[in-house]
Length: 88
Image 1: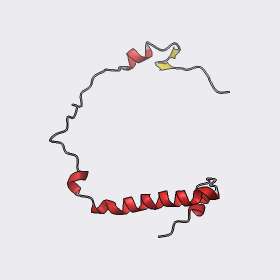
Image 2: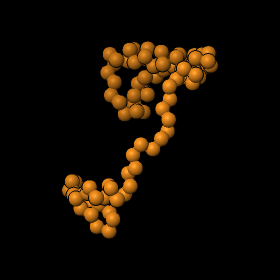
Image 3: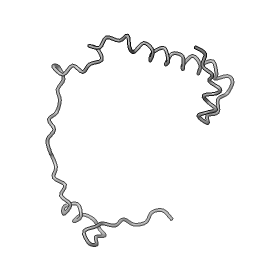
Image 4: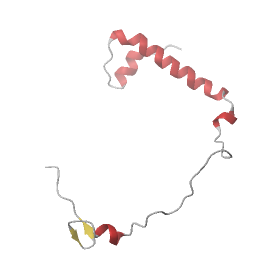
């Protein structure tokens, strides 16, 4: 398969020197070859091994109630906090 690196660079609005074309073409071909080999990979390798994995439990560790958050804000009005304008 032939990869038109100049066309890809043009479509993606990248400037590519002619000296870089052969290197980029080789890199792109290597990526395509790797992706085309994925269906041949052993599914057991790709599947997560949950027997030997230590997963953390999904537990609530911090109760961020709105009252606690709002009490820390410098500018509050009607249960809303305001931030100073930083962009003109």
